[in-house]
Image 1 (cartoon, rainbow, N blue to C red):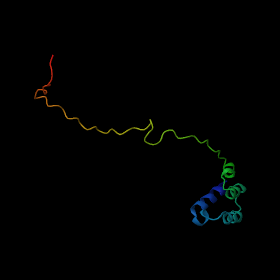
Image 2 (cartoon, helix red, strand yellow):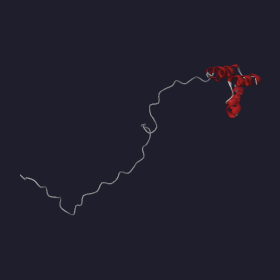
Image 3 (cartoon, one colour):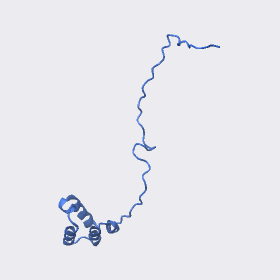
Amino acid sequence: MTDTIELLETIGSDASLRYAQTAELKDVLEQVQASAELTMAVLAGDSAPLRVELGIQQLPQTPQTNAPGHGDDEEEADVPLPEEPQPDRSSPPPAKNGPSG
């Protein structure tokens, strides 16, 4: 398994391997005697054989319910609200025109 991880690191860090055609990468894997699971994963374009070799179970996909900025867990920044103008208390309120009574 360590060899597989090292090979994956090498493939990921070497652009000529990372972007190689499947047949070319298959030849390289055969030359370095890569595991059958890694070779099958490359040929099939499916990581399932590799997950088996590495003992990784696929996690169930769950929909994301809290989008960033809309979750209850996030604290919202306190933004000061603009102050409303206060009425001038030194003069009496304007008189109402209309029938009184």
